[in-house]
Length: 177
Image 1 (cartoon, rainbow, N blue to C red):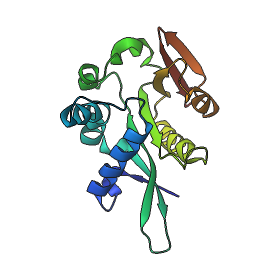
Image 2 (image 1 turned 120 degrees about the horizontal axis):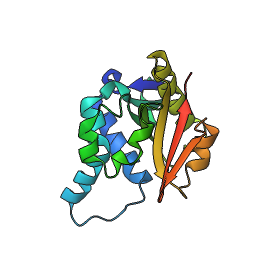
Image 3 (image 1 turned 180 degrees about the horizontal axis):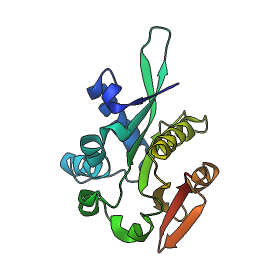
Image 4 (image 1 turned 180 degrees about the vertical axis):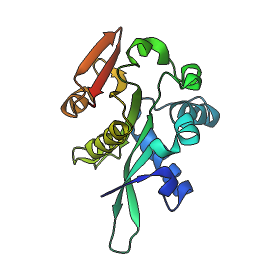
């Protein structure tokens, strides 16, 4: 498995199509009133990252003997949550944990294709992004999930041990220093 940033993907359009496919295979929301509503939902959760932080969009690629690669998962990240004011207008409830951004300035979203979960793909993506953030001198990285979401145990095993609950939302932080 190889981890590749979006700008280094040989076929950007194919990579973005795989990101969209994996996103919809992973999201809990499955019904939309129209194709436009579905596209808007996808843009809400991924558009800013692809457009504004492409170096922080990572793909896990499984290369075959011919060098062709199947995309197994992706991570979208932002290294400056407080400075990404556009995200506060785009992503619902973005500001709920703004008081934690100084200690954990970077955040991420990660999804892995069904059938490839529980094989270290997500952990490799998270660890690579965390190391990139640490190299840049950031003190921590975080994510927000649901209190009862199935991914909480995964993130805890990945070192996200700082937890803050506010209503149904759970902030999980990982220190990098």
